[in-house]
Every structure is written in C-alpha cells, then in structure tokens.
Image (cartoon, rainbow, N blue to C red):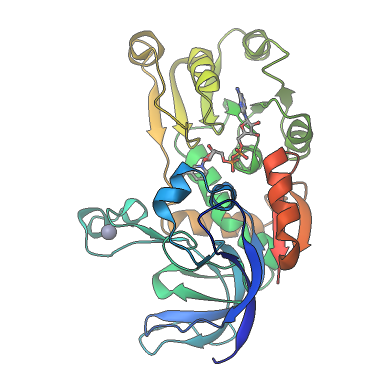
Length: 346
Ligand code: NAD
Ligand code: ZN
C-alpha cells in the first residue's frame, strides 16, 4: 500500500521520540500489513524512550516504537497461508528464527536468534504495521481491541503463574506494575485461594485490590513477614510471582516461601543480585523458574480463553487511553509509576 502514515518514531540516540509522518511500510512475502486499532505501552517502550543502557545496545534509529497491538489485516504476503484480509489479529512480539536448537525442539519462545517487534524491527505505534506470519494471532471478534492488545503482557503473567502450582494455594506477588497486576487476576483465575501483593506504590496497590488481591502490603512501611505468616497460619506462601526485579523483594520473598515452594521469576534486576542459595533455595527445596516472554502459542490460547469466557476483567488495569500523538503523556505517567496499563490509539 502506498502512502503516508503517522507514527511514533525514535529518531535520535537520546531521550525522547517524535510523532511524525512516515511512509506506510512495505511487507514481505511472509508478512502481513495491518491497520492498527489499539496498542499499549510496555516497560520496554519506556526504556527505549528514556534511552537507557539496554536501549543504547539494542536499538538502531530511526525506528518506529511499540509492540503490543491489535488490528485488522489489510494485505497479506504471497507466502502467507490461513490469514486473510479483514482478520482481527494480535501479534506475538518475539520473532523466532525457526532453525536453532530451541526452535527445533518446541521452545521457540527462547529462540537463540530471537528478534523482537519494536526492538529489532519497526514496531506498531503507528497507523499501519507489518507483522511476520509466524507471530500472527487471530483474535475472537468479540474481544475488544484494547484487551486484545493486552494479551501479549497477559502472556508474561500467565507463564509466570503457571511456573508453579497455585490452585488451592497461597500466593505472593512482589511488584504490582502491569505484569504483577495482571498476575493477580491470573492467579485467581487458576484457583489461588489467597493472593497477597507487595508493592510500595499507593496507586498500584489500589488497582491490585480491584484486580482481586486479598491483601495488599506496602513493604516499605509494613512488616511483610508478619503479615504473610499471620495470613498463612505460620506456613508461608506456596508460590511467589516475582514481578519487581528488586533484589530486596526477591530475597524477602525467598524467605517467605514455605519449604518445597516455587517461584516464577519475571522481574529483571538491573544488575547481578546476591542470593542465599544454600539456606534460601537448596536446603528449602525451592524451585526457581525463569520466565521469558510467553510460550508460543500455549499462552495465547490461555489468554484468549480467559478473555473470551470473561474469567478475567482487565478494566481496572487500563487506567489511561490516549491518542498516539499524546504518547508523551503516557511515557511521563509510566515514569511516575502512577498508572496501570496505558492504551495508545491511532
Ligand atoms: P514495572 O516496573 O512497572 O513494575 C515493577 C513494580 O515493582 C513497580 O510497581 C515497583 O513500584 C515495584 N517494586 C519496586 N520495589 C519493590 C519492592 N521492594 N517490593 C515490591 N515491589 C516493588 O514493570 P512491569 O512492566 O510490571 O514488569 C515487571 C518486571 O518484569 C520488570 O522488571 C520488567 O522488566 C520485567 N519483564 C520481564 C519480561 C520477561 O520476559 N522476563 C517481560 C516483561 C517484563
Ligand atoms: Zn530459533
């Protein structure tokens, strides 16, 4: 399709981005062109916007930002099967190579040569976007576009919660950013009997309650240890979803897991962390599971079923909806932490 579109473009190797006119992108024989209906901001987009050390290493400018998306297929490449014009789709954002050891053994979500939409190629904060056929996820038409775009981060939460056994168990979620907040409702949907959330930010603790947390704790002002033991009959929690990337939260959580318990690790510490492996993990028989992205595509089936059957309500999570051109407001809110998920619409 020829023509111009509006997009949020990282134009300089410095903090910021520009809302500007660019060409509608060309697509390849194994790609589709979509009309973007809804997108959402991820922490990764904020890192790119702020131009942190990770972004400096991974992003080549100019590049269109964004990766969480829902939209309608407009055109399909000639080697794309089973996807048609008019299909309502979302996108997995990890683009696996298809030939490495991990890809060949059913683990394409941890592909050795992984590329990521909006990181290694132009993204979706635009009126139109190109999606690789391997990443296309056909949505149920009854799912609203705002929710459909959130299936990607939902997948992080689902994989983390499914890293252990939460049914009938006491669960602690450390960090109630968007990932932790979605995890609250995912843990409930999978049958956790009690979900306790630890989060310093007042605004986010309030949303955690709306998402279904039984108890929220400010770990900087309250005694998390006392509260956990009191609420678990002195046993400790069975499962922790570590969603903060904070070293202190991680170590405290390890102490609060009952022996034999499990922890899903999604949060990314900025630096190496120090752990008491001997007493905190080995002698307690704790299982630690690292979670990268989402399983392709098991997690997508789960996310879409939870949404279609209304087992999860994402409304409290969506705190702001802005037109694309007001993306800076969204980035500032993300920097403040006083938000849940922010939707951007072309
Ligand atoms: P976020 O930064 O919005 O949320 C982290 C939350 O942790 C914040 O609300 C913060 O206030 C809270 N926090 C800080 N210190 C804490 C403490 N001591 N105890 C409890 N909470 C504390 O990030 P997000 O978008 O919700 O993502 C969560 C984490 O997962 C981030 O570290 C992110 O980088 C990471 N992540 C990893 C993957 C992956 O593939 N592994 C994917 C997405 C996100
Ligand atoms: Zn691969």
